[in-house]
Length: 103
Image 1 (tube, rainbow, N blue to C red):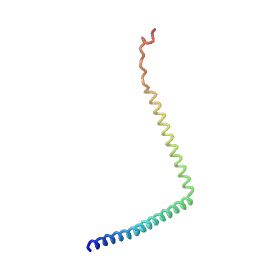
Image 2: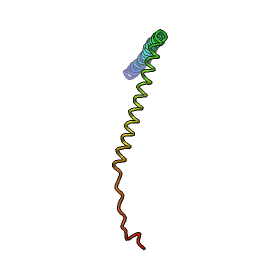
Image 3: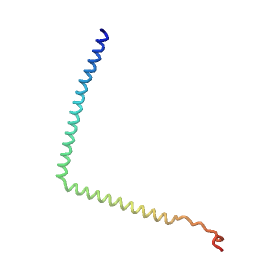
Image 4: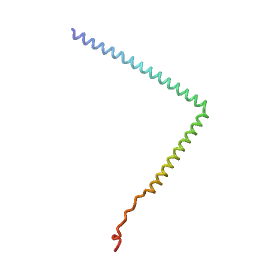
């Protein structure tokens, strides 16, 4: 009989574990729902603030364009400088022996 009681206690433990797992799943689902709701609210606030300050977004876009342009100019200047440096540092051609070309 003790073996049957131990098996029943094992069965009851597994049953209690199964009951806890759905509860944990529900809690996780509720937490994820709360997080998603907060995210949606934050997006709505951002959208509303963007619609209120369209002129700010335009100026920020212009600033971004200017930064990109400056960056491109810097890259072009660096490339030109590298080309000039390379031109000055050309490898010397090896002198060919004159006897090779004589007949």
